[in-house]
Image 1 (tube, rainbow over the protein chains, first blue to last red):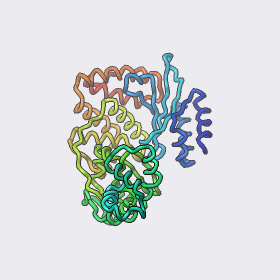
Image 2: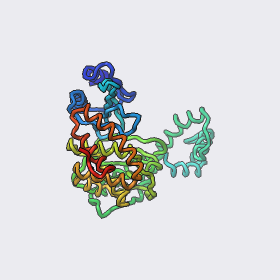
Image 3: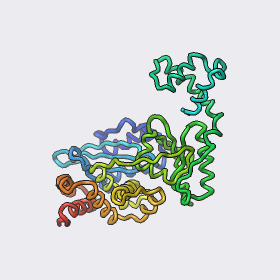
Image 4: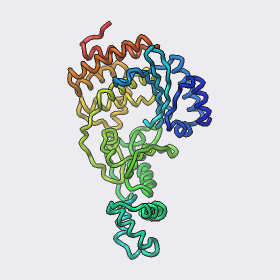
Length: 99
Length: 286
């Protein structure tokens, strides 16, 4: 599955407010098909409130709720959920970095 | 770039000019070796032609680079793996000057990949070549605790310098590592990396001992959520003053309480809350 298809699927899950970091395409293209499927399933589980996340300790990030997962030995996904003043979760960001 | 090769080339000018390098190219090599700034034209000549020729020549030096091996933590190693590690080093030192092999490949019957560390001048990156996990790092990064620990059980083609490690993590970094470690342990992950990092820091700061990869592997196997909560308390108490911890954790607890009301599942957040409350108040608030 190419990165554009993955982006489309994730946008279907989280909505159009989802943002991707600039390395997303590059990293996704390194993953095997099975890893991509498991990654998408995990995203769906995050959306359905079935995964565990945490609040970043830095004060300036107190409005964020962060999910993380290692999807390959050198790729780690961070999914950030932003809660606005009304305490509703509105924005999702997705980024993957080297562990 | 193979430093020894550069020295050989520079000391044997007559042998290489004009058969392999031109006079101008030779001047560029001299400037590069003396760390002088190269003009754009010189950079182009260096990277498009000279470097490629030097790389080809470095293949001829391969036996030289792997003539001597340095073993650290030999008592933990499986002998047949040492020989395999030497072969891996011999292969990679054709292209890179300084290489070392470390990780579970050297001491454990079961292993997932072979960690091959390669010293480069710039940058950090990782890639896989079959079962080999190549980690490219600079000499400076090699001084970091995690790489110093890796070098405690290693086979290398150079003497790995022991460095005194003084850098300590920030409170926010330790807290994030703790949160991730708890989640990893609840998820029963096969390789809980954050939990591993935390046990490593605990040993480093509370026991003043740099764990080698085998010790780290064994300590990580024993971990559970209760132990990790105890460990973070001890690390934080060791590294930060009571007042600083009180202010920082007190504020964080307020945010945590709000999040607990808004988020499900939240049982893991209750674990964080209990740990931090016990740290600053001496008991968990109901």
